[in-house]
Length: 192
Image 1: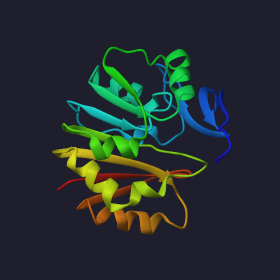
Image 2: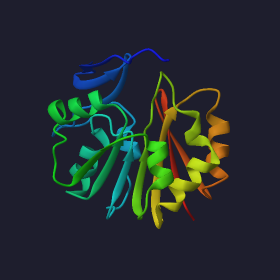
Image 3: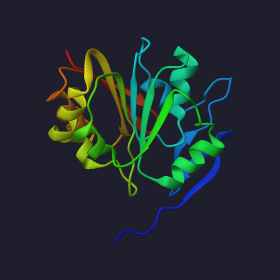
Image 4: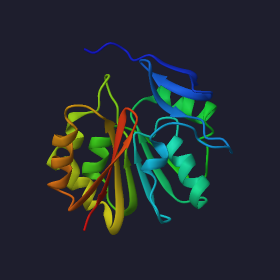
Protein backbone atom coordinates (compact mmCIF):
# COMPACT_ATOMS: atom_id res chain seq x y z
CA UNK A 1 0.00 0.00 0.00
CA UNK A 2 1.34 3.42 -0.92
CA UNK A 3 1.72 6.14 1.67
CA UNK A 4 -0.89 8.91 1.72
CA UNK A 5 -0.14 11.95 -0.40
CA UNK A 6 0.44 15.32 1.21
CA UNK A 7 -1.82 17.94 -0.37
CA UNK A 8 -1.60 21.60 0.63
CA UNK A 9 -1.85 25.19 -0.54
CA UNK A 10 1.38 27.11 -0.91
CA UNK A 11 3.00 29.63 -3.19
CA UNK A 12 4.89 29.29 -6.45
CA UNK A 13 6.65 32.39 -7.75
CA UNK A 14 4.08 34.73 -6.23
CA UNK A 15 1.00 32.69 -7.14
CA UNK A 16 -1.20 30.62 -4.84
CA UNK A 17 -0.43 27.02 -5.70
CA UNK A 18 -1.78 23.54 -5.03
CA UNK A 19 1.07 21.20 -4.10
CA UNK A 20 1.07 17.43 -3.85
CA UNK A 21 4.10 15.90 -2.17
CA UNK A 22 5.97 19.16 -2.84
CA UNK A 23 5.22 19.32 -6.59
CA UNK A 24 3.14 22.23 -7.92
CA UNK A 25 -0.03 20.87 -9.52
CA UNK A 26 -2.03 24.04 -10.12
CA UNK A 27 -1.84 27.78 -9.66
CA UNK A 28 -4.61 30.33 -9.20
CA UNK A 29 -5.33 32.12 -12.47
CA UNK A 30 -5.84 35.85 -11.94
CA UNK A 31 -6.35 38.70 -14.36
CA UNK A 32 -2.66 39.42 -14.88
CA UNK A 33 -0.03 37.34 -16.63
CA UNK A 34 0.08 33.72 -15.55
CA UNK A 35 3.80 33.73 -14.94
CA UNK A 36 6.10 30.79 -15.50
CA UNK A 37 4.77 27.33 -16.17
CA UNK A 38 3.65 25.00 -18.90
CA UNK A 39 -0.11 25.58 -18.62
CA UNK A 40 -0.52 28.20 -21.40
CA UNK A 41 1.32 25.85 -23.79
CA UNK A 42 -1.39 23.25 -23.21
CA UNK A 43 -4.16 25.44 -24.64
CA UNK A 44 -5.67 24.99 -28.09
CA UNK A 45 -5.35 27.72 -30.70
CA UNK A 46 -9.07 27.72 -31.53
CA UNK A 47 -12.12 27.66 -29.27
CA UNK A 48 -13.16 24.09 -28.50
CA UNK A 49 -16.87 23.28 -28.39
CA UNK A 50 -16.23 20.75 -25.61
CA UNK A 51 -13.13 20.08 -23.48
CA UNK A 52 -11.88 17.19 -21.36
CA UNK A 53 -9.20 17.70 -18.70
CA UNK A 54 -7.62 14.54 -17.32
CA UNK A 55 -5.96 15.53 -14.06
CA UNK A 56 -8.06 18.59 -13.22
CA UNK A 57 -6.12 19.49 -10.06
CA UNK A 58 -7.04 22.99 -8.97
CA UNK A 59 -8.32 23.84 -12.44
CA UNK A 60 -5.52 25.97 -13.89
CA UNK A 61 -6.18 24.70 -17.42
CA UNK A 62 -9.97 25.09 -17.02
CA UNK A 63 -9.57 28.71 -15.92
CA UNK A 64 -7.11 29.47 -18.72
CA UNK A 65 -9.50 27.97 -21.28
CA UNK A 66 -12.32 30.19 -20.00
CA UNK A 67 -10.09 33.26 -19.84
CA UNK A 68 -9.12 32.76 -23.50
CA UNK A 69 -12.41 31.47 -24.96
CA UNK A 70 -15.19 32.31 -22.47
CA UNK A 71 -17.37 29.66 -20.86
CA UNK A 72 -17.22 26.33 -22.67
CA UNK A 73 -18.44 22.93 -21.48
CA UNK A 74 -15.59 21.26 -19.61
CA UNK A 75 -15.39 17.84 -18.00
CA UNK A 76 -12.57 17.58 -15.48
CA UNK A 77 -11.51 14.21 -14.10
CA UNK A 78 -9.62 14.14 -10.80
CA UNK A 79 -8.87 11.12 -8.64
CA UNK A 80 -8.19 12.80 -5.29
CA UNK A 81 -11.21 14.06 -3.29
CA UNK A 82 -8.96 16.34 -1.23
CA UNK A 83 -7.72 18.00 -4.43
CA UNK A 84 -11.31 18.42 -5.61
CA UNK A 85 -12.27 20.08 -2.30
CA UNK A 86 -9.33 22.49 -2.54
CA UNK A 87 -10.11 23.16 -6.21
CA UNK A 88 -13.64 24.16 -5.30
CA UNK A 89 -12.77 26.21 -2.22
CA UNK A 90 -9.43 27.85 -3.06
CA UNK A 91 -9.43 27.83 -6.89
CA UNK A 92 -13.05 28.81 -7.60
CA UNK A 93 -13.98 25.64 -9.50
CA UNK A 94 -17.69 25.84 -8.64
CA UNK A 95 -18.59 26.91 -12.17
CA UNK A 96 -21.75 26.01 -14.10
CA UNK A 97 -19.84 24.98 -17.23
CA UNK A 98 -17.34 22.72 -15.39
CA UNK A 99 -18.42 19.20 -14.50
CA UNK A 100 -16.01 17.63 -12.01
CA UNK A 101 -15.84 13.85 -11.97
CA UNK A 102 -14.05 12.07 -9.16
CA UNK A 103 -12.31 9.01 -10.52
CA UNK A 104 -9.40 7.45 -12.36
CA UNK A 105 -8.72 9.22 -15.67
CA UNK A 106 -7.49 5.99 -17.28
CA UNK A 107 -10.77 4.23 -16.45
CA UNK A 108 -12.82 7.25 -17.55
CA UNK A 109 -11.14 7.42 -20.97
CA UNK A 110 -11.66 3.70 -21.59
CA UNK A 111 -15.40 3.99 -20.87
CA UNK A 112 -16.25 7.52 -22.02
CA UNK A 113 -18.55 8.32 -24.90
CA UNK A 114 -18.97 11.48 -26.91
CA UNK A 115 -16.44 13.66 -28.66
CA UNK A 116 -14.19 16.46 -27.47
CA UNK A 117 -12.37 19.11 -29.49
CA UNK A 118 -9.69 19.39 -26.83
CA UNK A 119 -8.25 16.88 -24.37
CA UNK A 120 -5.63 17.87 -21.78
CA UNK A 121 -3.64 15.02 -20.24
CA UNK A 122 -2.04 16.45 -17.09
CA UNK A 123 -1.68 13.43 -14.83
CA UNK A 124 0.70 13.01 -11.89
CA UNK A 125 0.49 10.19 -9.34
CA UNK A 126 2.81 8.82 -6.68
CA UNK A 127 5.60 11.23 -7.59
CA UNK A 128 5.62 10.47 -11.31
CA UNK A 129 3.82 10.74 -14.62
CA UNK A 130 1.82 7.48 -14.96
CA UNK A 131 3.48 5.20 -17.52
CA UNK A 132 0.08 4.07 -18.80
CA UNK A 133 -0.56 7.43 -20.47
CA UNK A 134 2.07 6.55 -23.07
CA UNK A 135 0.60 3.11 -23.72
CA UNK A 136 -1.34 2.39 -26.90
CA UNK A 137 -4.58 1.39 -25.11
CA UNK A 138 -4.83 4.76 -23.35
CA UNK A 139 -3.70 6.80 -26.36
CA UNK A 140 -6.10 5.02 -28.71
CA UNK A 141 -8.95 5.64 -26.26
CA UNK A 142 -8.08 9.34 -26.11
CA UNK A 143 -7.89 9.53 -29.91
CA UNK A 144 -11.30 7.83 -30.13
CA UNK A 145 -12.77 10.68 -28.04
CA UNK A 146 -11.25 13.41 -30.22
CA UNK A 147 -12.98 15.21 -33.07
CA UNK A 148 -11.08 15.08 -36.41
CA UNK A 149 -9.81 18.65 -35.96
CA UNK A 150 -9.19 18.36 -32.23
CA UNK A 151 -6.08 18.65 -30.10
CA UNK A 152 -4.64 16.45 -27.37
CA UNK A 153 -2.10 18.22 -25.15
CA UNK A 154 0.03 15.98 -22.92
CA UNK A 155 2.21 17.37 -20.13
CA UNK A 156 5.21 15.42 -18.87
CA UNK A 157 8.63 15.99 -17.31
CA UNK A 158 11.61 16.66 -19.55
CA UNK A 159 14.05 13.79 -18.95
CA UNK A 160 15.89 10.92 -20.65
CA UNK A 161 12.53 9.35 -21.63
CA UNK A 162 11.33 12.33 -23.68
CA UNK A 163 12.34 10.87 -27.09
CA UNK A 164 10.72 7.52 -26.27
CA UNK A 165 7.53 9.25 -25.13
CA UNK A 166 7.42 11.26 -28.35
CA UNK A 167 7.86 8.05 -30.35
CA UNK A 168 4.99 6.38 -28.45
CA UNK A 169 2.70 9.35 -29.03
CA UNK A 170 3.64 9.37 -32.74
CA UNK A 171 2.62 5.71 -33.07
CA UNK A 172 -1.00 6.78 -32.42
CA UNK A 173 -1.11 10.44 -33.47
CA UNK A 174 0.23 11.32 -36.94
CA UNK A 175 1.30 14.83 -35.90
CA UNK A 176 3.11 15.42 -32.60
CA UNK A 177 4.88 18.66 -31.75
CA UNK A 178 6.93 19.01 -28.56
CA UNK A 179 7.16 22.37 -26.79
CA UNK A 180 9.70 22.84 -23.99
CA UNK A 181 8.83 24.68 -20.80
CA UNK A 182 11.61 24.66 -18.18
CA UNK A 183 11.29 21.21 -16.51
CA UNK A 184 8.27 20.13 -18.56
CA UNK A 185 7.44 19.18 -22.12
CA UNK A 186 4.03 19.65 -23.70
CA UNK A 187 3.22 17.32 -26.58
CA UNK A 188 0.59 18.77 -28.89
CA UNK A 189 -0.98 15.83 -30.74
CA UNK A 190 -3.28 16.01 -33.75
CA UNK A 191 -5.36 13.07 -34.98
CA UNK A 192 -4.67 13.70 -38.67
